Image (cartoon, rainbow, N blue to C red; front, side, top):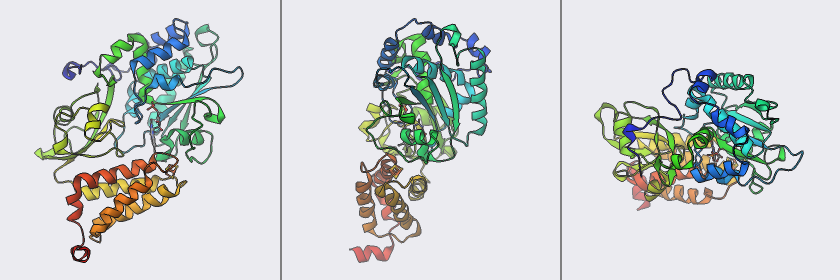
Length: 429
Ligand SMILES: Cc1cc2nc3c(=O)[nH]c(=O)nc-3n(C[C@H](O)[C@H](O)[C@H](O)COP(=O)(O)O)c2cc1C
Ligand code: SF4
């Protein structure tokens, strides 16, 4: 049952002043779950089962069940270290939610990462944060230092004999470093070319050791599940995609921002109530619901559609990172798409030919519509290019680049046709 969002009480970013301070966090029940976990209240397997049963679907974009992913870790071998990589690269355009956790509730994430490390018998957690978040890196470091001082991280945690270290790694401004295998290469100090899978990170991860990668918000949900139980978590939001979630709303709305609500909210409620409606009383033209790579929706498609996988699938799109971009009636959709293609062209790591060449061609071809040099055939050529990129590369960046092109043409074909060079229409006829 979808909860009445108006009465929703925030749990990831609650309105508690100075919650970043560890004493305030502890005063409000923080690290209680960690104390119980490390005190041996549950078997490691039980913790993984709880997280699996809660169905925390990864908040980094792919929506995979976190507990199920944890269960893929192989049995622990004596003397072989294991790692957690916490993904705070947050580079997908339209996404800026992990930053709020770093700033307003870093200990919730740290507690979740520690519980994950305990459940999967890991030795260390690496927190990968994009370098542009300089202030947020400092905030996170301060929070980690506080947790070390209190004995929640480090050697012999709370006298239990358990050792877990936590380190921050600064990114250097590449979108591809958010892709999990590229993130590991970057952490190892190499050029961040994504790795082919298999082997998967649970088998061959950081420095070739068993590793699990989770998004910051995913890990922040973990203490909530341990504290309140999986049934509580599942009672929030949409049954197929439950829990609290941070919606990032940007674009032509009156109140852009990051808002915590249950999953499964109506897109229209988010735009017209939470984000205060469209700027200057304009009408809606389109919405990109979950970060720049997910398929765009026309205004006439969103009625009754809610922000969860099953509902968004009905209109052919995804929840992604829940970073929603709202476009008003005056938006030049060709220009919007050109901006996106430029981004992916710039960010392709260049390792695979369909992506290295394809992203450049997408940008150039969409650019022809911008300058009035396109022909009708260029629309088919663009779709053909997408066919030759999707599912043919080492990582999903090529798909992320092709989907917006395919879906923008599919839904706004007329906007492109209007930009075809007039003489080209005659030549093509
Ligand atoms: C090109 C590309 C960029 C990505 N960037 C991010 C990112 O910035 N943050 C993130 O958490 N996941 C990102 N992902 C998804 C990760 O590969 C991975 O699925 C995720 O970190 C797993 O965490 P989760 O299961 O908790 O969501 C990206 C994926 C791709 C293909
Ligand atoms: S798909 Fe693109 S970004 Fe991913 S590995 Fe290949 S070239 Fe690099």
